Structure formats: structure tokens, C-alpha cells
Amino acid sequence: MFNFGKQTIKFVIGYAKYSQSSRVAKPLPFKKPKAAGNSIQHFIDTKQVRAVGGNGGDGCISFLSLWSNEFAGPDGGDGGHGGHVILHATTDAKDLCQLPTVARAAEGGKGENKNCHGKNADHLVIEVPVGTVIKNINGKVIGDLSKEGLMFIAARGGAGGKGNQFFTTDTEQSPVICEFGAMGEEIEYLVEIRSMAHVGLIGFPNAGKSSLLRAMSRARPKVASYPFTTLKPYLGIVEYDDYEQIAIADLPGLIPDSHKNKGLGIQFLKHTERCMVLLYVVDASLDEPWTYVETLKHELLQFSESFSDRPHIIAANKIDLPGAIENVELIKSNTGLPVIPVSAKTGENLETLMREIKIIYDRSKEQQQELQETDN
Ligand SMILES: Nc1nc2c(ncn2[C@@H]2O[C@H](COP(=O)(O)OP(=O)(O)OP(=O)(O)O)[C@@H](O)[C@H]2O)c(=O)[nH]1
Ligand SMILES: [Mg+2]
Image (cartoon, rainbow, N blue to C red; front, side, top):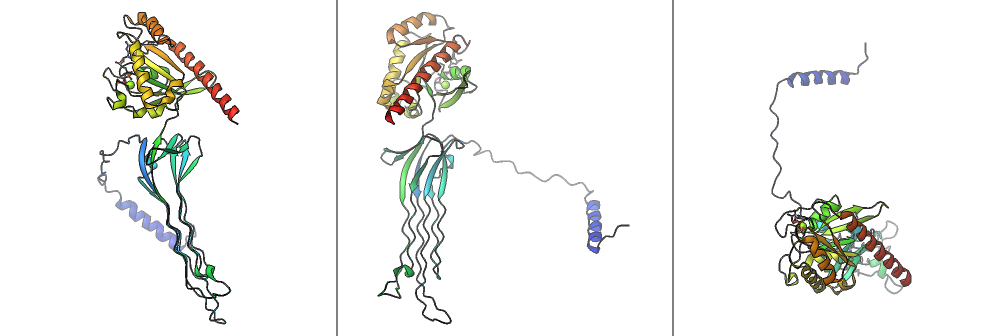
């Protein structure tokens, strides 16, 4: 009926044979379990990196010899340029895990005869999160990738060497010299992320910072009744009716002498350096809670003087506990700062706190815009 070619018939027969033999049940193949050892990925926010630019390709010494012209002159081509190492800020990257400890760009290709130019190497472009700061080995800031798309050339590649054709002059028609490709730069950097939160939660351990962030946003930082539950900064986004989104950073707790590396130290405060607003969270149910605010302020100033003029308010947390509400007025009178009594547990007064944050945020945003306009 059908006009099958010879080959097609062979295939059909072969298939039938295969399906007959596959009727025999076989056990499922053994599946190797996944390694459990390194399945946890840590958030990497600082890294020391050695950036090495690619070397340029060497020039070539060559002389052209044609059937009609045995001595047709020098034709050694130039070497290609080495690649740069470039850091590129993008919102796709979340931490510095893509940044290798030694970032080495490719070398340029060698020059060839017949004046062939060596291949220019591709640049090594490494994606880092927006908010990455690049410091030299002495700790001085030399690059700040604060906006999406900004790039930083960490190490330049070497230029390609010239071939002997380049050195031909009126008096020297057959130069036997060429250049080596230049070496790429090799520079060490300290790279760190400064998160771009708008509001930073500052407080003693157990004050209820993580609980507040949980209550205000969809972030789910760990909450527990022991100190130093939060070991790393945690970001949450609060959405408002006007579609404004404010990023709030929950930070590890500060204690007296944190700047002397007590507790978890103060290095994580680098994440608050860009916060527009600081929210001091104090446990209002404790005795003399205003003294905690003074300590927090002192520790912040030990990290950076820039915190002195940062807008800040106090959230007097845990007002559901006995004795807390009486302390609110005392905190106000002792610190002279705006105090908002809240309870992260019951959600009492949270709306007032969020409204207050928005007002201060809007105000400082306007101030920043005015400053930028006057600068321009
Ligand atoms: N009663 C009451 N308890 C609260 C409130 N807020 C937080 N807590 C409790 O306080 C304890 C500490 O809360 P966390 O949110 O982990 O405190 P933290 O400031 O993030 O602490 P660290 O991460 O250790 O710095 C937990 O047991 C919470 O349940 C509150 O408004 N009322
Ligand atoms: Mg916490």
C-alpha cells in the first residue's frame, strides 16, 4: 500500500525489535543523592579581590616573500590588546558571589605574518549589586557603583606590541625588531556592598527590630527571645498607597562598646550609611529606656560622624507590656526626639509609625533633590 524506501522498512523492523526487548522490567537506575555539605549559600557583602588585566599580545617579526618578489618587505602584524577587568552594577546581582578572589582577564592574541593583527581580548565584565563600593587596599573609597549600569574598570589590559612592519622607515626597510605586549595592570581592592535601604532599624538586642520589620512588611526575619537573633542585615519593603516603596533594613543589635568589637561589632553599620532615616527601636518596658538611645547614638557616631545630622525618630516598642506606656513621655522629655509608641506584637499604633516614617522620608527626599538642583 505504501511505497516505503528500503531504509524506512529497516527502521520499522528495528523499532519493533527494540520494543519487544524493552518489555522486560528493569530496576530504576541508582540516583546519587545530592551533596548536602555546601548547599547553603552565604550572603557575601565584602570581599578582597585581585584584579589582573590581560597582557597584550606580542608583535610579530616576519618578512613577506612572493613568487615574483622574494624580498617583499616586513609584514609582522601587531599583537591584540589584553582585556580589562570591569565591575558592572546591576540589580540582578544580589551579593558578591560572582566576584572571584582573583579576577583575571584574557590575553590579547599574537600578531601574525601578512600584517595580521592579533585578536583583541574580550573584557571580563563581572556583575555586582547596585550599591557596591570599591576601596583601595588602604581603605580609601575609589569607586561607588550607586546606580544601575555604572561600571568601574578595576584593571586595564596591556596594549598589544607592534610588529616589525610598524618599524619600517625610509632608512630601515627590513627591521628585525618588534614589541612585546604590555603587561596588564594588577591591583588589589576591597569590595563591599552598602545596601540601599531608606530606613535603618537601630536598637539593642531583643528590642523588637525584627518583629517590627515583620509587622510592617512581608519580610520574615527570624524573631526569638534571645539576644543577637539577627546576625546579618535583613531588608524589607513597605508599600504605601501612593506606590512609594520604602526599603527598611533590620540590623543586628548594638550594645555598649560595640565599636570596640563587643557583641557583633559595628561593621554592619556600613549598611546604614545611605539610610535617609534612622529609626531607633527601644524596649519601652525596661527601666530608664532613654539611656539606651544615648548609647545607640554614641555607637553610631563612633562609626561615622555623618550620622549626626541624619533624621531620626524613636519607636518605643512593647507598649503592650506593663509600665511601658508610662515610660513613653519620659523618653520624649529625656531625649527631645519624636517618640512613637508601638507594639510589634499586637500591631498597636503601627500605622502611625509608618505614616511618620513616610513624612520624614518625603521631607529628606525633597531636601536631597533641592541640594542636587543647587549643585547643578
Ligand atoms: N510583648 C511584646 N514582645 C515583643 C514585641 N516585639 C518583640 N517582642 C519580643 O521580643 C523578643 C525579641 O524580638 P526580636 O524581634 O527578635 O528582637 P530584635 O531586636 O530583632 O533582636 P536581635 O535580633 O537579637 O537584635 C521576641 O521574643 C519577641 O517576641 C512587642 O511589641 N511586645
Ligand atoms: Mg532581630
